Length: 546
Image (tube, rainbow, N blue to C red; front, side, top):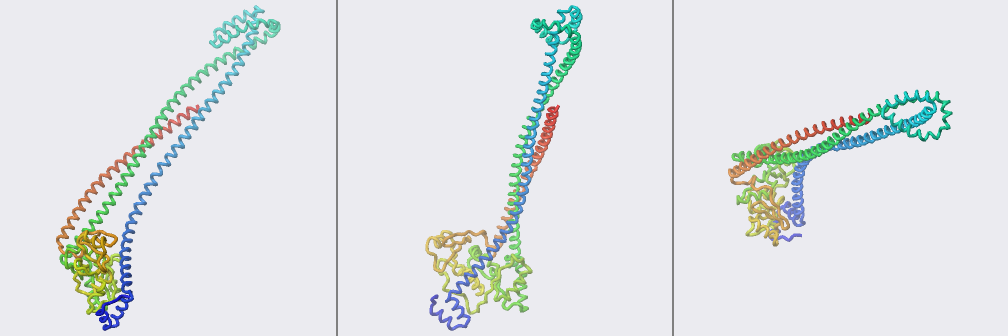
């Protein structure tokens, strides 16, 4: 249990049951537990606000993700085009294989026909041997054969070669004189065969001329096929270069669009900041005539409705607030430090009971949306005889004032509320940063002190240090005109930044449009080249089939 001084003990014994209950709460440390619970509740409210802000950012990120996903799906069509190109190359290779097979087959057929011709030539040679033997033996037959030999000499060079071969083989046939008598009997049959052989010779001559023409045509076809293949290789090389160029241009376009998205996001952030500053400027201008408008444009109307509802008897006790309007600074230079300490408590209202809280919530719903309503603290209002609570837990230092010491609070309800909810009696204000670090972190902090704030609003704990996200007082600022001038200067800076970003955005947009035009032109060139490749392939296939 806690040990209290004797005067305080007598004070609690001689007072009412409520004071005895409070004494019991302090003695059993339930008061500290209540203060911790209220601190946790406040932290929960702050965390909830941060979660709502993060959810709004999450929506923007989700939209950006959908845009990136759509771009990625568009890029997958390039891979399909590459797969199609590989399949076409394989088909072209098989077409070339088929063409070679056809050429081999044609050559085989020509070899077979030439083999049959050699057989006829051998038969012709045998018959001519028999004829020559018969010419030597029979002069009558020689006279008739002489005329036919003259006709044979007029034949083509191929026939002359055949006759020379026949003459060379006549010497070998001299040994076959025994066959002479048999040849005489077969002379008539030889004459018939000779006539048939003449016809065959003419046919062979015609076939030779046809083969020469076919070979000439085949040579021309091969030359055409060779030239077409050269063109095909040239166009395929061009297609490869165009595909690489398209890939490079797509990457450059993708980077340009990423840069554009970043610039748009920065532009949006600047616009949001400028709108916030413009709203703040309007509040400051309005607060020239009514200081309550610093807490919101609808705050004066809300307070008027609270007064009317209290007159009508809807409240048991009139709510107090906003707290920032109920406190005054002893030193205006400490405005940033006090606001950094109190934060959301500056717009908080105090109610005596939950019935009054429900009425106040109904009045607030007319002027504030659900997520932007001021906080309401429900705690029974202290009697006027009780000034401040729990004086033994105050941080007392002759050189270092607490937040409570820096404030002039006319209403004890407001003071006790800030003591209970924020513990301002144990929070010091140390003007210099180095002094704050030295007091709180390099040595033992003063008695009952758990944190401190500097003039700039820095929050100092024994084991950590935080810097605020604002540098000017929003509710407790003394020099209104100076603050208005500073806000206007910041607005001008934001406008200049916004104009620079817009110029940059327009130039990036123009670059993206130029890149898209060049990419489209390259794609059209690739399509035309592919069409030419298909035509050349068709020509090669057609010539190969012929």
